[in-house]
Image (cartoon, rainbow, N blue to C red; front, side, top):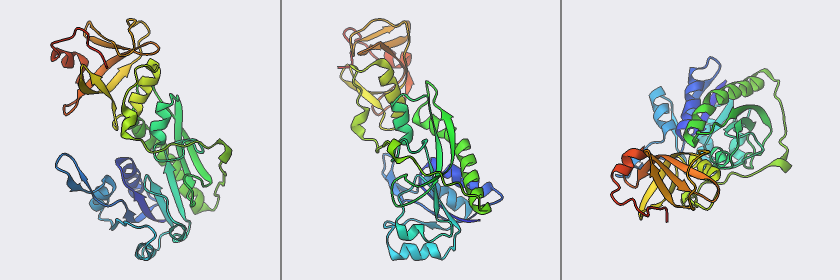
Length: 308
């Protein structure tokens, strides 16, 4: 089957690699976002999918306007049977009609739950114990089309967005293979979503990472995991901006007021609105993440230390 792959981040690149290594998919081209400035030097950097595509010697399209006639014409030249989309964009109606079988999308939730740009982050932040991967037919609405395949993925107590995305790749590839074979063999499942059960997963905002220590410890722990790597769970410790990169919710920690800090036996605890949060790994702004004991060695004045 001739496939044009559309995606941008590292998560999407994993699926491109899988398709290239399969014995049933002929990836003929890749569509991805334009190069963006990155790093402290703001150097123009190609997205991970483009980098991998160039390694494979594949043609790469980076349109700035998906509705432009030039983009449609370029896609038609590849005579694709199917578009496979992973973390890219909503495709306009005219583009969906270009490929013989239209387009399928790999989405990081059990649709219709968590439609939107941040399904993995929102599921972790909401404290869920499981989520999943859905492969569905794209239509003109966000994450709206009929489902072809789904796989459930467990969310562990210490999973972050980064680790959960890694866990989703293998089951996601299985679901994608299933969906493509359904189309190839004419046995397509059409599992229309129950739209009444739909929930949203809007894009994260930087300010969401600011920690409110009046919330319960478990809620804070979940949000810190969800916002790792971006925007990070952050706050001011003794007037210094820090990011909490790894935390836990011990059952027998000290009783502390929200935001109050206690450092004991090389362990750092923070009071919350319900229970106590233990900080395991911390990062000062502009520095690298480090174990909390190493961080605290650099704090000379510990009396009255708090997140306030």
